[in-house]
Length: 249
Image 1 (cartoon, rainbow, N blue to C red):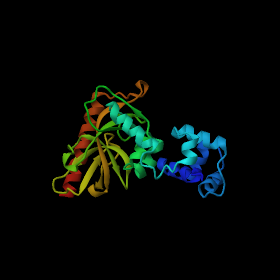
Image 2: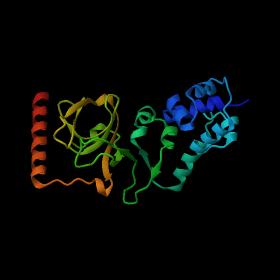
Image 3: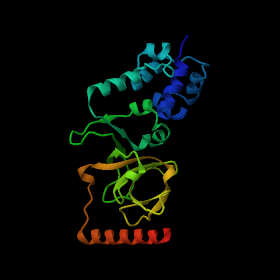
Image 4: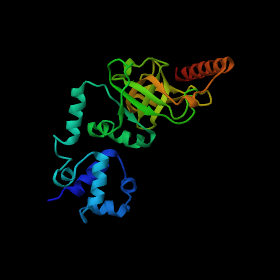
């Protein structure tokens, strides 16, 4: 009995890919993915080899093992190996993986498949890196990678510090978080670029918070601000925060 079709569906969902996205990566028609997953056709050997290369699996694994039900799968073994090494690896979530991350952030197998790197200057902790786009946090340029440390409890949020905020409504955003003692059910998210207005998210809507520890960007992308720009930025932010606090009170 071949588990190829079932494993294809499992691996695709693990990455959060649509059938169209998976087909594009394999350079085949989307209809073939559907046929394979519904076991109306057997994948060609070259397709299986490509999948094996993507997921670091052998043909035997793809054909003879039910990857979705096997607790001691290659994914579990890889996680155990990483933990045993004592290396604090940082999983990297690029923009193209953002949609998949929202669906799989709590799935250890999805997280295990993210690319990783290490930064020796960081203290021990639970870190993750996110690529950001847009100019709402200038002078932090679009395309920067924010390395954040996991915040386990909203009570530990330090007001006005920068965080990667992951919520059901807003997705993955990089903002300053302002807490209001009287409105614990909401968090105010503020951009460093005064052209963007602050807004609120419901605390119960927040799935994860990562306090920014490092910003990684290309040297050619670094923005420079003069003293007048910085003064105007601070003034605008203070005015926006004061106005919002008055409205909330």
